[in-house]
Length: 138
Length: 138
DNA sequence: AGACAGTTTATAATGATTCTAAACTAGTGT
DNA sequence: ACACTAGTTTAGAATCATTATAAACTGTCT
Image (cartoon, rainbow over all chains, first blue to last red; front, side, top):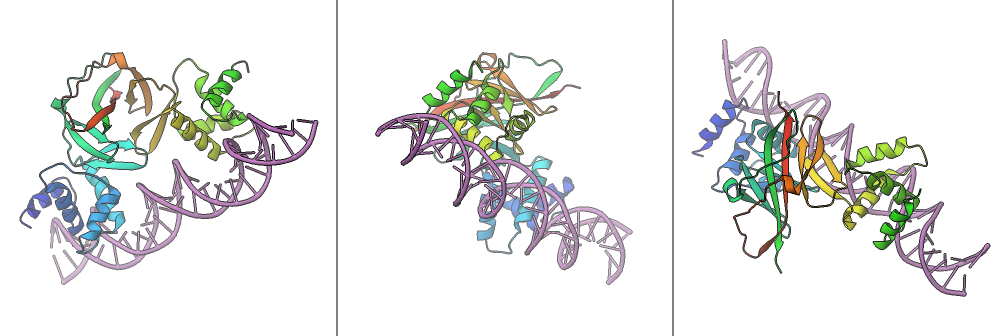
């Protein structure tokens, strides 16, 4: 309750109306200590099980897409059958646990400096993303 | 014609019957100097326009999935609306040109050694993939 | 309060991929 | 050469995730 006003400000400041649905999703996504990795389907299930008024699936998609466009969420592509989103929008990398099929953040500083030696004429580098796939070692 | 036998051997050696369709797709994918990046849709269009007997879309999917499973192709995940495949199965990385929406190979040696400093107990690293997004610099 | 644009919603539409089951074919043995 | 069998291809149906639609609703501004 108390932090709704933070989310209302956040939404307003980016031109999104602070609707009930968006505030609820904000609280779910951003009102936590650790970063949150989720799929649309997972997010939708959580929302369904918190049986206050339900939010329609279309709105979940709309909201996640809006938040992504505004830079509040990052999409992480790992396997062709799942699309993950990440509430950590800072420059960082990922472990992907192939057994648990889950993402783990990897700090930028935990990855040594990456030096790309090939130059593409007329092109600038926008981002460098590292994905480390891990599995049980037995 | 002359190199069909290579592909026939390759297919047989991995337990795949060398059918007309698979040989044709092999030639298209692997009978070239440079590595080839493609989407299913793109591959299907090329096959359609080479107006010898057509290969059904289901077979294109089946074949690409079989080749992927056998390790002849690597799937590269970049944008949620496109799935790319790569005939270069050696350890390497990628540039993604956000303007042309196309992949460019980046040699393993063109990326400085990557040193992951975080260790996940009980997990071993299976792969490290680097994706460098680039765009026109004007 | 009234007006209006932005938002939500259920449902329909789309598009990519997989499934199905019948027809076909490569490989093997005779 | 012939026939058998398991693997493969095929068109079309089915499925799944996502987006579009358009009517109802709501936040904001005056």
